[in-house]
Image (cartoon, rainbow, N blue to C red):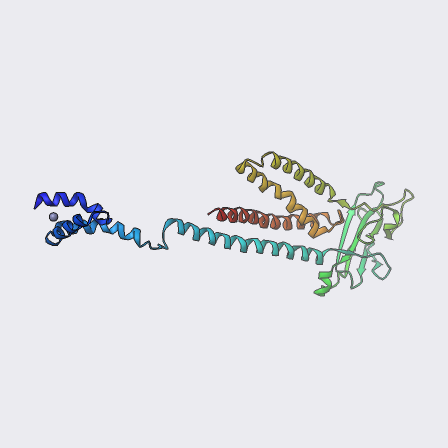
Length: 309
Ligand SMILES: [Zn+2]
């Protein structure tokens, strides 16, 4: 029997695959009926054969797990992307609502009252919700000079912010007071004496104060355009090198994000009278746009990657 078993062992793989002649098959069958050892051997051979003929989808197989993970990541990225865009739009809407609306001077807007102490009280009408009082250096050093700005915003009106009421200014070292009211007509200070109205004191013969032109955010915008053009050039040169090109793309969206932030906060204006506020808002909005675009970029490449599968 041992000898026959050896012959059967040699034939078994072929028998399992059904590629033996009928006579051989008959011979193997007969032997198997009487030999448990060889039957066992055949079972062992058939296990992988069964897997091959009846493929089962294993939901926990490594490639499938990776695919599931990739799809989940896509979902998360899409959500984050949308959230960042919504936040950026919300922020620009808020910046639009809180944009200062400057008042032009009228005697009802600010009432000036002299106190016995020599101080002066400036009382605002209820429309005024914000003011800025700033002491400036007098070139002649003979007077105590103040600049006053008064404004409100759509936001303040909407939420009925109470009026700024009043503020008191005191002369310094006995130098007489001089108070100017700065007018921003249509959001632009006219660069003439008319834009600043003296509301208290005596304007010196030398001419008094000329309203400063608003500071420009246009330089930043130009700097951004220059940065964009340089990066676009680098991108073009690297367009066939996948890895460095993608790195440049991540930088390339920085000036684009800033530009979008500027557009949202300032529109097509570049001159601002509240530069710091506007700049901060542009940056905040820009950062959100950057996040959104970064996610969109990675989403774009992932979708491209998935399409290859
Ligand atoms: Zn046998």
